[in-house]
Length: 97
Image (tube, rainbow, N blue to C red; front, side, top):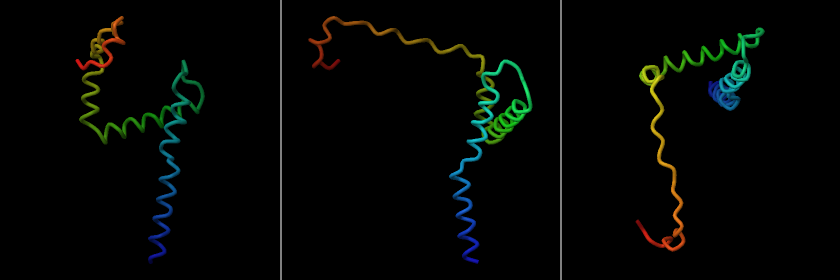
């Protein structure tokens, strides 16, 4: 019985180290991102993998998904002012504001 637990832990560890979900997600991104139109079965397979991934994320994080959907068209935040050049920066280097 103990050997069964050890084998199960080893298989689980190896599957975790293989990161199969991450590899599938990266493959799907390569198949779908940057293409102008759907072409071929690999695009459709990649699109399916990405759809399953996004639906799984929405099921796992419904509040964040609703918030992102609600704010998807918000304007970007205002930009901070550009830094200004101070010609006396070397003289003020030791001062604290």
